[in-house]
Each structure stands twice: as structure tokens, then as C-alpha cells.
Image (cartoon, rainbow, N blue to C red; front, side, top):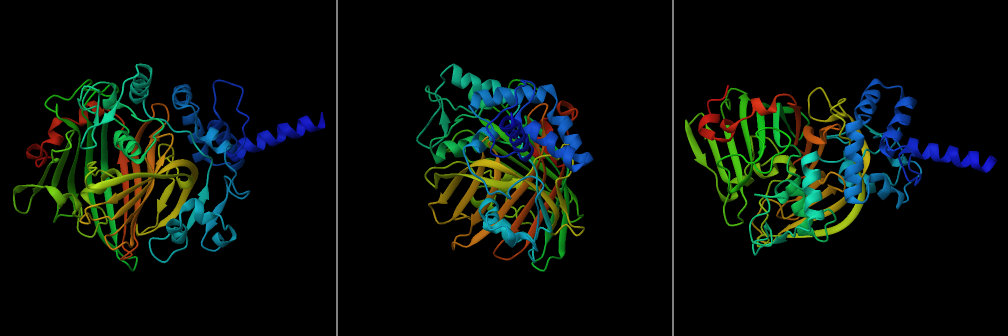
Length: 476
């Protein structure tokens, strides 16, 4: 009886830590992530954590989590069961520049670049806290279509350009289940993993960030420029969650589109850009930029997508959503180089701000991180002409999005890092952005972003005019 009581206590402790325990809750109306967060919230006595527990306790959230787990064959906790973690790596641990050396394992799970940022002199993170691991999943449209690919044994392969096609040669991203699905639930190589990231897209059929702020900072940590804009994204095919449903008229050859309109400062007010992606590997993006000072529209082609989005901002057009480079097997090699657990910013923005910037917006005052299972994708430039000679992206094994990203410049120097917080909605599985930290390791400049996502009336506030630069230029 004494041993049995001890086993029960150990199991309860494992749930609280969110690490390494194989005993799942007996009740079907819960999951191990929820139980870990319940325990953590009760210990921390924090209203923000209570709010997050309320969101992930929604029966719709629990149902989606279970269905995605059944489809994948695992959730994050199943994968954690197979690993051994340092004893100190547990929810509640607070890390600062003063104590980080006490945890020699930390650099492995953060990557050295982010480890160095804790207490760092530029783009630094003053305080970091580990919270329980969540279980993430995409929305019901992706769930049903990914199921259809598996259950109907629909084959997706690659054409000579490396684009995804069905057996009849038609592009998978333009019709059928493949247009709104994760094509390779368990990727076997880098090209499959790359396409999972592409297919994840923005994790919602219609996106509006209203507004999005860009803050650029000097190497000395001083504010440089501040920009304000609205940003939109539209998924064009096999839409099931947000009207218009089905396919967007007139976009038969295109997969998706992104658009942005700038309000501030005055010298860029009215700058508007629209970029739409063709499914064909041989067709360049339909990419147009209206320049208000010239009162003309510029057609952007080729390497124009590598240009900075704005003066002083460490972000190019190809860096939208962390990675929006057109897949090209002639120009790039795509390699699956490992599977790693990493500590990355938690996606709890729907309940509270989990990555708080300093007052000057040039560093991070406070960041919460969680342990995530990832695949590590390496993309190598074979041409010698691209802005990044190499890219490493840690792709989440549940949500299929970028958890961390580091790039290298053409000389082989570590260049830019990308860390983001997400506004993820547990009841629907839809995702949005909440903020981004970009650190340039060459010149020590920093760009931070804060976003406010629109969740209501997306079928009304976003329409075709946002994706026509001749109409978007007049947006107010």
C-alpha cells in the first residue's frame, strides 16, 4: 500500500511538471497538457494561467486535440515520454543572465544564439520562464483534409520542379484535400518537411493583423524607426471554416496571397504591397508594390523579394511568416538533419502576453518558453546568390510551424534569428501571430514586432480588394 501511494504521488508530480511521465489521465475529456497546466496554474496563483486553463479546457479544444493525436499517432507528451530531460528543466524555472550558467544544459535546448541573448547587451532577454508544454493542433479543415489524404490513400508526389502534385499531375495546393492539409504527417526527408511548413501557411483561412507594429533598433540598443501597418492573408482553395467557402474566384492558378498597407510614419504612409503565389514552379509570384511618393506601382521580380521590407527593419519580403521563399529544388537543397526538443516561446497570446518587450521595444523584458518536439530543417542555397547561404528551421511536430529559425549570410556567418509568439485559439485550432523578435548577429541590429489579430467578422473585413494593389492603394 505504501508503494502504491508513492506511485500515485510520482504520477501526480509528473503531470505537474509536464515532463516524461507515461501515465495518461483516465478521463477522455482531458489530456496531459491540460492536466499539467491545471496543476501549474494552481501552484502559481496567476490569473493569466487560469485564463489559459479555461481556454484549453473547452470541450471543442479537447476534442480537436484528441482527433489530431489519433491522426498523427502521438502528441507532444507521447514524444516526451521517449526522452530523458535534465532534472532542473521543469515548469516554473526562471532564468536570467545572473543564473543561466547554473544550468549547463540550457544552451542545448535554447540553441546557443538564444542562450547568449539572456542577459545579453543587445537584443537581450532579461527574464525567461519555463511553463508546461502544450499540445497544439490545426483547425478542423486541415484535420478533415489530412484525414482524407490518409483514408482515401491519395498520393502526393513531386514534379520535376519539386512542386507537389497528384498522380494525374495537377497541383495539390489548388484542389482537393491537398489544398488544405498537412501532406506528409511523418516526413521522411527535407523536401517533404519543407512542404509541410509551406502547407501550414498562416494556420488560418483568412488573416488580418490590425495593426502590426515594426520596431527597428540600432546596434547600441536605441530605437531607430517605428512603423504601423495592417496585414492580410488569404488561403485561396478548399476553404471550409471562414466565408467565402470553397475557392476564391479568379485565383485558379494561385495558392495564397499576402498584402500589407502602411499607415505610419508619414513618409511611408500609403505604401502597399501584394504578393500572390502561383502553384507552378516555373511562374514567379505576382508581386506588386505601390510607392506613394512616386504615385506608381512597381512590379517586383527575382531577387526583389530579398529586399528589406522597410528601411532599418531586419526583415525581407521572403521572411514573411518566417519563411515564404518559393520552393525550388534547382536553387536549394532541403535536408531533414535531425529531431530535437527545443525551448521556444509559448503560444498563449489568446489568453495573455507571454513575450513582453522593454519600454523602448529593443529587447525582451520577459519571455515564457515551453519544451517543443521538432524536426530540424536545413535549406542550403546552391546558387551562391541568395541572401542566406543556409537556413535552419525547427518545425513543430504537432503544429507544423516554425518554432525557431537561424540563417547564415553568404560568407557563412550566423546572420538572423527568428523567435515568435503565437495567438493560437484552442477551441478552433486556428493560429495568428502575436509578436516576433529578430536579431541580426552580424551588425547587432534588432527588429521586434507586435501584432493584434482580428478574430471577429473576418468574412466581412477582408475581401478581394486587399489583394489587388490598385484597390489596396486607396485603403484607409
